[in-house]
Length: 223
Ligand SMILES: C[S@@+](CC[C@H](N)C(=O)[O-])C[C@H]1O[C@@H](n2cnc3c(N)ncnc32)[C@H](O)[C@@H]1O
Image 1 (tube, rainbow, N blue to C red):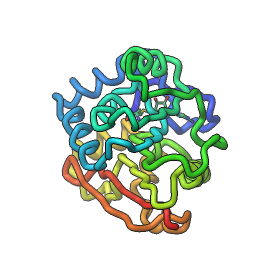
Image 2: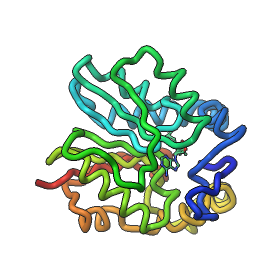
Image 3: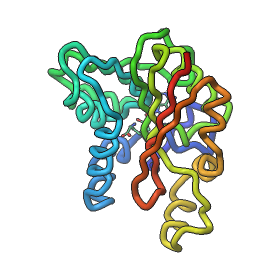
């Protein structure tokens, strides 16, 4: 999901590190750019996660905290959400949106670097972040998630589905090919369940949105 990019991951084709106007207005741009459909899709996808009141949830690349506020509605005081984020403009918004929610916290942390968590979370969530990394970094992120989850913990990836871009409508082809980075173009060609199986996950499940162009993929930490 586009906007001005930073260069700090040293991957010039990535657009996942966003800053400036696009970052400061991230939620509004997606909401009004999609005539409200994106916000409704997020609410539906988060309902599909099946959050339990006492869940501990790790949100990787949590952005403005919009999704964390939605997830927090399902939690009791015994549950918690930890968001990981590096974008300054995003962090500022997260602090405002999540102020007063004592069980929602934020760490300034690159998600591809070693995380200080082991067998700690019931669920991990990554929304429109995974596609923006090269394959080698995606593997580091997935392995970080595996380590951070409790055995039987669930990893939810909300992102582009696997699809044939040439089978899509002309307008979607233009928006996707011009607006999204080459990493996203490659992401949709990967068989993600096979890849995740190789990293120790199984018991997959999925929900689809926007004519199957977007998927909430569930993968369970085996063991
Ligand atoms: C497209 S936004 C998605 C934000 C949020 N997950 C959502 O669905 O609204 C991508 C987010 O990932 C963050 N991000 C990018 N690279 C990151 C990294 N290496 N570590 C942590 N966060 C990162 C960006 O700052 C940005 O907030």
